[in-house]
Length: 340
Ligand SMILES: Cc1ncc(COP(=O)(O)O)c(C=O)c1O
Image 1 (cartoon, rainbow, N blue to C red):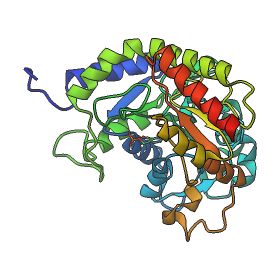
Image 2 (image 1 turned 60 degrees about the horizontal axis):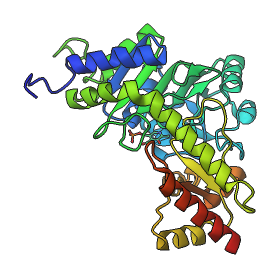
Image 3 (image 1 turned 135 degrees about the vertical axis):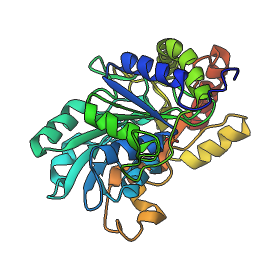
């Protein structure tokens, strides 16, 4: 505050360097939200009107919105019911002459099956943009998400694993030209002030948010480890409860959410609420069934995503959740599911 340097100053520069080093990428370009990170990445990779982008229908609308915002059409490919991520084995059949990119989402902090995604991209000459909004610090076969595709997009919304005290986002890439374009687009399409080259936007990270993110980044691995330990305890206490499907504790998963599946979800959620336990439903409607895509995607069918929307329930989980609180949530949930 004393420096009176509020936007894109030394804190932003230092945070970008530290984030790039943590993620093992050449460039990290900050911006003011995860949604903008997706838009900037797609535009910088030259994806636009007429192009198709393959993605998951079981995600936050912003993933699809970003593609629509740059004029590209989202093509929804059903999910793998075990991981809730895009089923990479179905990518080939969704590719058309207009397909330009694949946009896998590392949902709830679980890395997508990136070997298959990258394999499909290589077969068809497609660009891969990772939506890492929920997965800062997650790793696929030891490599950080956001460093696997042509670009990675992160959100620092307060509920994320690495979060700001407000909005924030980041584009990662190893491609110098993509990074340069993203840097230009985030400040009104200008490399040099008042010399605008393209129609860009205003999407800058505040110094204050960058400073907060710099304080938090060194703690991230410990927080992610704590999330994994909490997930392991949930799995232990809830094991064997009939009718409850638990998320697998896969390698590199950072559990932004611990999401179970249960058939009578809404009734269970209401009863948990009566017991003072707040849960969330991410997401109640698959993207292709949202009003915004009602006409354009009327014939799309993704039965696994549709079924998941009716069954998923995210349980409370934050890095310093204490054992007593967690056990109360787990035992109450187990008792209610057993009661039926
Ligand atoms: C999967 C996913 N993609 C994109 C976004 C958009 O990020 P932001 O809210 O920072 O715009 C979010 C969430 O916030 C998200 O969960």
